[in-house]
Length: 504
Ligand code: NAD
Image (cartoon, rainbow, N blue to C red):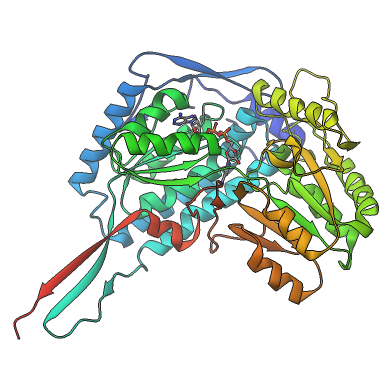
């Protein structure tokens, strides 16, 4: 890859993309033990750039045998203690080195995610900043996390120790490939575990580049391994493995339910699930600047093509301002049209693949059939790539599929409400509980509603605010895990209770 200056313009990114070479340098094989290898069965799968339809690379397609091998190596690495028993301060140094390497290679990593799954380079660069910050935060946390001394009498000394769990498998989705990876892998490694990562079959490339950088940073062999492949093959094998102690998952609720069954059928492995959402974004008439709120409401659903777990996909607007507010959202969406993901000026990129593209268009069709009023978008954009414009439906009711189900695309469903009580009922009428937004100047109402919303996070007068210090996760069928912050670090360790009798 040529590196005369960091890419800034559309032409720079196009040139960088043209210089990518998968046969020379960039890996497409699995990373097992300490080597890049073909899948045991020799299988591969094709990864395609959804913005152009072009084939990017043939990638190793792992299966049960690869999972078994990796689990064995992970266990051996854990037992040697080279990483698991290393002083936390020393683990920190290696992970900070990895973060530095990620930073030095952030343009290339961002480009891999953009080419692999269609998101814009601007969005991918934001993901890289998030992923690097996550590695740094978790690395910095690990030598500041104390155990406990229980309040006993003088006949005993009772310690609560925090220990790594063993082998952690992490299965991640394609919508923020490297950032979702970092949210799992950074705390699990910091806590001293051996980690096996299975990236999505729709976006495997940045994970393999991360493996190269992890080796360069000095992670011992077997401590971090990457198995590309499909969910029903290698993903299932990891979930059913008797040698995996913990499975950390981000993906759909349907897959999350399947993984719970696999954990039950195998070894009761610890399971953390970060699943889907249908998040309500609630706008009251008392907002000071409705133009600003409308821009945020549009970005809350159209960012990353709507392929966001916490997309503000249900917009709940107080009825007196509903018509005027929708006009403002539609106006704001005009500047959020999809374009070439390599153009830094594009707000949206391409939809990840043909299956997801058909699924989104199917929901748009269903919305029309169910009687919702189309206010913007609604037709796919012609082209070799997979592009869908911002689409807005008004008059949505909770019975409609577009009002209940996660579409995972640029489709906004608008509901009206008359008062606070109705807004709460509508907002909570969902199997999901990932995020909720509240826009109002009334602090009493904000506090009342914040407590009543069934949601892992509430954004007040913003959408998706937060940094590494805040836990991220859902309630109900949005899952049970918490990524980021010291809470995620704690999830990847076991508590050991030590009661020492003392002679008196
Ligand atoms: P998905 O469930 O189809 O796949 C996620 C991962 O699970 C992939 O790596 C896939 O290969 C694997 N997988 C699929 N079936 C499997 C099986 N039977 N056994 C083991 N592994 C299996 O989800 P997706 O389409 O990749 O991602 C979109 C979903 O992810 C959306 O529902 C979105 O809301 C959710 N998501 C949630 C969060 C969060 O933090 N809560 C973040 C990002 C995405």
